Length: 422
Image (cartoon, rainbow, N blue to C red; front, top):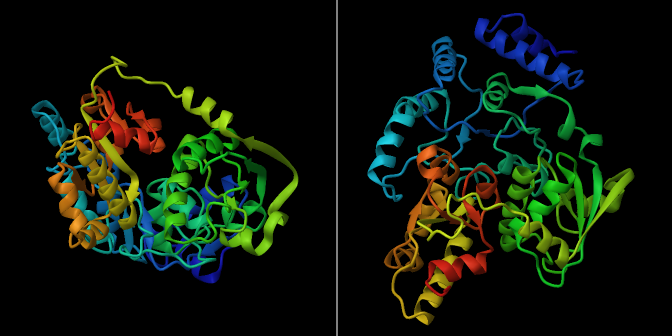
């Protein structure tokens, strides 16, 4: 690998042994994928995926302490994925005890993140790219991010450039200011392997469409057509839709970048010239989406059990989505002659989004309906033996994929939580 003078100096140890180790690790990582140079990071902020203080992650805490002690802290401030704990989120006594043991290092880890460079105590969210949070890369920015749903959004909707990095590698890139140049950082790596033709009669559910595409193309890049008839521009509604769509492509498959014809930046600029020679075609109609949904397994111990909890917001919701859910829940409760949700419901959003939304009258509408508004990570709440036993509902295909939660379309979930379903 060819390094610049600055990069070589770090590699040779002129900025300390710890930075040298980090640079050597990134060089080995890049060479594994055929990279012949490093690319300087140009994004203002990083984003880390590891937010949780699991008691078993002792090597991570030791590594963080070594970095902090050496002074080799992050060269850029960063956001980080959501925390796993919130006292407002329902849990029984056994789960409460389990969480205390499982995440016993949370406070210590939070302090390490402060010393390493987290932007603020409100910087814990998987949707760091929300305007309220402020970690919004520009088109063409080179990033050192992890968190699959954030990476795919930055690449696709914002036109930034980032590979699907693993935890710790995201921090390493931020510390030395560069990442290996390969994959989705390159023009060739951003070309599409698949032409996906959406031919549904109605606007497809974002989470379901993303799931179908992710499972079909896996880590390849899809170029999706047929959605611009429902989205004339990449406005806030479209961004919220593709936030959820992208999270499903990334979790149900391994998509790091998608192009939407006439909407996403590179598709607007280059059109179908983004398709590689010999690309494959996947047609999605109503029957295909029905087939995909019917094949989701329900892994509850009792598939017919009464749901104990519902999670909405994985990835975190936008302010507009919070308002929309508030209106819909209020309307359906009135129609069903009820005042409170029939199933304990947790809606999640970034701390900065929740803070801004708290001054909206619709915040009280949700609270009065018994809905908990939190900035928790639903996945980390669910991904343990105690909560895994619970019959939990969700409209998130990411949460469905990684946990025992059962997927429902938004309209169906709304009916259940407001007591309309028999």
